Figure: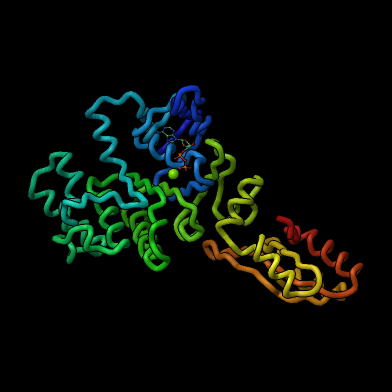
Amino acid sequence: MTLIRLTGVTKTFPPSGKGGSPVVAVDDVSLDIAAGEVCGIIGYSGAGKSTVLRLVNALETPTSGTVEIDGRDVTNLRERELRELRGDIGMIFQQFNLFDSRTVAGNVAYPLEVARRPRAEIASRVDELLRFVGLSDKARNYPEQLSGGQKQRVGIARALATSPRILLADEATSALDPDTTQEVLGLLKRINDELGVTILVITHEMDVIRTLADRVIVMEHGRVIESGDVFDVLSAPQHAATRRFVASIIEDVPVGEQLRTLHDRHPGRIVTFTIREGDVTQADVFAALSSHGVRFELVHGGINDIGGRVFGHLTLALTGEADAVEQAIRAASTFAPLIEEDVRG
Ligand SMILES: Nc1ncnc2c1ncn2[C@@H]1O[C@H](COP(=O)(O)OP(=O)(O)O)[C@@H](O)[C@H]1O
Ligand SMILES: [Mg+2]
């Protein structure tokens, strides 16, 4: 069942100064997100990701196209309907956006106060939420007394206060260290698994997509350029911009200075092969090189596990007779896609 549907959505912002041109933040985007799904949106800064989230919770109105939540068009809602919609969509942010002057409990209570729930109900709901995020003992503390991870857990409890069916996360773990990120990702996973909440996450972090998302949408210049199963998109990106972006978050392919250093340290040719479960293994690559009498040394690489399926990159220094090396590279690259050695720049 589709819970979130954008159809031909464009969002144009007026020019910021005199003589400037309008900014097309989102350009003819259509997407469907099923109930219960965790969907990641990735792409470079300025791609239009945050604007898509703001269109979903009706903080922005599309210039054209429609945004539907559970089959209902959310543009032109009346005040009361808009309040209902907001209660059905929680949001968390990179900088947490907590109220500094309210206690932890006060922050979590806030959306319930806005919704004018009875006091006793608010108190028991806040208790329940703080227990869920593991912060019962911090109820009377203020945000400034908390660590980043604890602050985000408060943000999550607050976002869940009105029992929304949808949770939007805009770079929610980008300000956290790796351990804390794992802890918050674990919590988001429970929210999806145990509460059945549909989650839309914007991120530039590999870990977030890998551990959380079922599906990923790639945006560039306001458009969706690619989308699909996480393993497929990350291990075999179709679009050049996706390849660049994925390489930048995976960080297992040496580029620039790192590649120059490898060339300085190792004799011979330096090449990177892509390996991908179901298509090509490390053993296949090694066998092809050996059969051409080429010696190789692994100088860089990384293996990524996505839901138990692996893909990655092997950067090898190859030595031997020049013709043999050339032939070996050609043979291996027929099944293990080759990333060209490039030391320019
Ligand atoms: N309120 C706004 N007014 C004018 N321009 C905006 C506004 N919000 C976003 N933009 C512009 O729209 C484009 C997409 O922004 P955004 O959705 O924040 O991208 P992302 O989240 O992918 O970095 C950017 O060029 C940004 O400057
Ligand atoms: Mg953004």
